[in-house]
Amino acid sequence: METYDLITRNAEEVVTDEEVRELAADPDGKRAYVGYEPSGVLHLGHLLTANKLIDLQEAGMEVVILLADVHAYLNGKGTFEEIRETAEQMKAQFVAYGLDEDNTEFVYGSAFQLDEEYTLDLHELELSTTLNRSQRAMAEIQGDETAKVSHVVYPLMQTLDIEYLDLDLAVGGLDQRKVHMLAREELPELGYDVRPALHTPIVADLTSGEGKMSSSEGVTISMEDSTDDLEEKVNSAFCPPTRDPEGDLENPVLELFEFHVFPRFDEIVVERPDEYGGDLTYDDYESLAADLESGELHPADAKGTLATYLDELIAPGREKLRELRA
Ligand code: IYR
Image (spheres, rainbow, N blue to C red):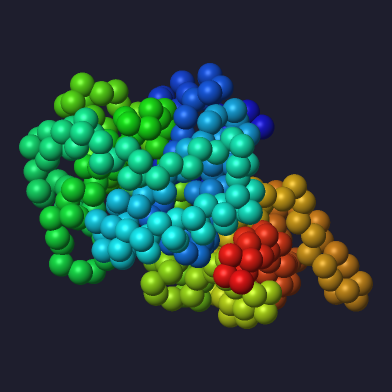
């Protein structure tokens, strides 16, 4: 695959395409990052951006994972001590999932975000950014609670991370786009360079095909799920025989194949008894989606296969969690 195609596959958006093309022309040693508010258990939302980091490593880029402890604190996720503990668990799960420990730099936010220079830059950004602008950037990240001062500081710090970690590309889910747009506007105010951003899609809720799959509402799949849990969740998923259901709905089963399974496996085998036509083999998402639409692949078989591959993907992380908790 061409480097540009590898870097941008399954991305919902790149800002800007021209800047990412420039990066793709000379990716060696360029630094990309994702920041995560530490949480004890990874779910598919984390793994979607992790898949992108694996793509970027394959493209020759250096990958940085920011364990955003200060951000989690500002977003009301607990005491520093609690957050630190979950960050260590998170790191172990990323490594188990397939990020190369030797080629991934894990950095705690608190390792540089409390330095004097960073703090003074932060105050300068506080002066140059309106409350309204910062609140809008935060809208999709913040929970439902009333906005605190911490919530408007948060995106300004995320902006500075891009400079202080010396990055060439910021990666995140589509929910991070407003922060990245703010960063593109504000970094030059401090005399720093603008960096491109790449956003992964938000996967629809498994049972309804609506909105976004999140850990706080609806059904989500996580590193904690047993093989049986996975089967049960995937079997009850919404899976009409089309990749484009009516209205605002998505087909979450196809989305999981597209964004989670195909990027990590060269070939997908749907096992079927001979009397139902025998096994089906796919080496790309398009042919599987086309077979679901034509009726050649039954939704029940698609679901069973999806559960099997997801199980294989999360098994090492699940094992790691068990060890850590023992
Ligand atoms: N806002 C992210 C966490 C985060 C991301 C980056 I990129 C940072 O530089 C800092 C924090 C979230 O919603 O999880």
